[in-house]
Image 1 (cartoon, rainbow, N blue to C red):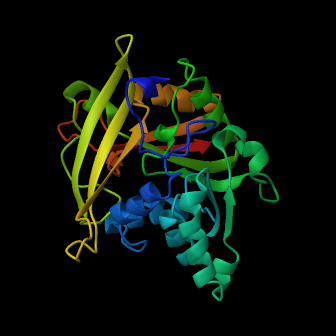
Image 2: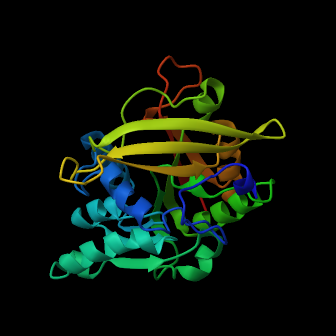
Length: 295
């Protein structure tokens, strides 16, 4: 394991099975501070996602990386029928708490939240009657959490096949990743604020790239987040934690997605919610893939 020479995650994080990088609970808590209030999604992101789903007549949505529930809560509030899953029980507890606090609202009482693993997603999540969800979302650079333990991306291929299998014919998969092309070529993330979150507590994010046999194997981001109770007697001012990601480049990830659908899809790529053209002057922070299953 590379852990013997390079620590890939905060202490206390599980190292076996599908890695839960939030297993120590503290990282999950700080991550909640990083993303901000559950109602603090950027207006551009909210308008784009809601518009996309409604344009394609989507009602049943599966969030396969719901984390603390920030996207799912937004969708439930907007009238969608939502099933939310995540591999981290420490992250799910925030979503479960929100559902409990709002259980008297019919939409939240019907919100389905389950722990699930991408490697066994087809077994962990029952499909709706009629087969498949209208839309499956995997946003916030979530898929990049899955490492390439075998060095051949077989885990990535299996996970994406399972995710694609949850999409009904005519349905959508919306999945994203950071602009790792830029990170690998420059050693740092593109400039600009996070397109998803409005939190003002993030003070610094340091980027590191781990090379194995002259090939980019992992990107780590070291977050420094200001704590809201900073300044109180004895309270720490900042919290630091590290998360690791597999650096999916645009061309190779596009191929993985096409293979997951066996080529039977329409595929469009956006950069920060705008149509992306290779060679364009604007450098996006995120690439967003929208795939429509054709059969």
